[in-house]
Image (cartoon, helix red, strand yellow):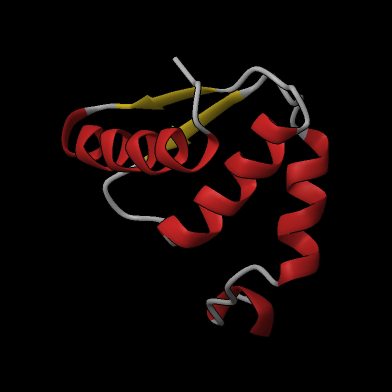
Length: 82
Protein backbone atom coordinates (compact mmCIF):
# COMPACT_ATOMS: atom_id res chain seq x y z
CA UNK A 1 0.00 0.00 0.00
CA UNK A 2 1.39 3.38 -0.93
CA UNK A 3 1.32 6.41 1.31
CA UNK A 4 -1.41 8.03 -0.79
CA UNK A 5 -3.70 5.00 -0.50
CA UNK A 6 -3.47 4.97 3.29
CA UNK A 7 -4.50 8.63 3.56
CA UNK A 8 -8.15 9.57 3.09
CA UNK A 9 -8.05 12.90 1.28
CA UNK A 10 -11.29 14.74 0.69
CA UNK A 11 -11.64 16.35 -2.75
CA UNK A 12 -10.49 19.92 -3.02
CA UNK A 13 -12.53 22.68 -4.54
CA UNK A 14 -10.55 22.39 -7.77
CA UNK A 15 -11.32 18.68 -8.07
CA UNK A 16 -15.00 19.28 -7.35
CA UNK A 17 -15.14 22.00 -10.02
CA UNK A 18 -13.50 19.65 -12.53
CA UNK A 19 -16.05 16.96 -11.74
CA UNK A 20 -18.90 19.44 -12.11
CA UNK A 21 -17.53 20.61 -15.44
CA UNK A 22 -17.62 17.02 -16.78
CA UNK A 23 -21.31 16.58 -15.98
CA UNK A 24 -23.84 17.82 -18.53
CA UNK A 25 -26.01 20.68 -17.34
CA UNK A 26 -29.39 19.04 -17.83
CA UNK A 27 -31.23 21.41 -15.51
CA UNK A 28 -31.82 18.80 -12.81
CA UNK A 29 -30.73 19.60 -9.25
CA UNK A 30 -30.60 16.47 -7.11
CA UNK A 31 -30.93 16.53 -3.34
CA UNK A 32 -29.82 13.99 -0.77
CA UNK A 33 -30.60 13.78 2.93
CA UNK A 34 -26.97 14.72 3.63
CA UNK A 35 -25.26 17.24 1.50
CA UNK A 36 -24.81 20.80 0.42
CA UNK A 37 -25.81 23.89 2.26
CA UNK A 38 -29.32 24.95 1.34
CA UNK A 39 -28.16 28.57 1.16
CA UNK A 40 -25.66 27.76 -1.61
CA UNK A 41 -28.23 25.69 -3.47
CA UNK A 42 -30.84 28.44 -3.28
CA UNK A 43 -28.33 30.98 -4.62
CA UNK A 44 -27.46 28.65 -7.50
CA UNK A 45 -31.13 28.10 -8.33
CA UNK A 46 -31.93 31.81 -8.20
CA UNK A 47 -29.18 32.51 -10.76
CA UNK A 48 -30.46 29.77 -13.05
CA UNK A 49 -34.11 30.79 -12.84
CA UNK A 50 -33.41 34.52 -13.26
CA UNK A 51 -31.37 33.77 -16.39
CA UNK A 52 -34.43 32.02 -17.85
CA UNK A 53 -33.20 28.44 -17.60
CA UNK A 54 -35.58 25.61 -16.76
CA UNK A 55 -34.67 23.84 -13.51
CA UNK A 56 -36.05 20.60 -12.10
CA UNK A 57 -35.62 19.72 -8.43
CA UNK A 58 -35.30 16.03 -7.62
CA UNK A 59 -35.13 14.26 -4.26
CA UNK A 60 -35.97 10.86 -2.84
CA UNK A 61 -36.90 9.70 0.62
CA UNK A 62 -35.91 12.06 3.39
CA UNK A 63 -34.60 14.59 0.86
CA UNK A 64 -38.12 15.41 -0.33
CA UNK A 65 -38.47 17.80 2.62
CA UNK A 66 -35.38 19.72 1.42
CA UNK A 67 -36.77 19.89 -2.11
CA UNK A 68 -40.05 21.36 -0.89
CA UNK A 69 -38.29 23.87 1.36
CA UNK A 70 -35.96 25.08 -1.39
CA UNK A 71 -38.78 25.22 -3.96
CA UNK A 72 -40.86 27.33 -1.59
CA UNK A 73 -38.03 29.77 -0.88
CA UNK A 74 -37.16 30.16 -4.58
CA UNK A 75 -40.83 30.59 -5.48
CA UNK A 76 -41.25 33.31 -2.84
CA UNK A 77 -38.15 35.20 -3.97
CA UNK A 78 -38.81 34.98 -7.73
CA UNK A 79 -42.56 35.39 -7.85
CA UNK A 80 -44.39 33.66 -10.67
CA UNK A 81 -42.77 30.24 -10.72
CA UNK A 82 -44.67 27.00 -11.12
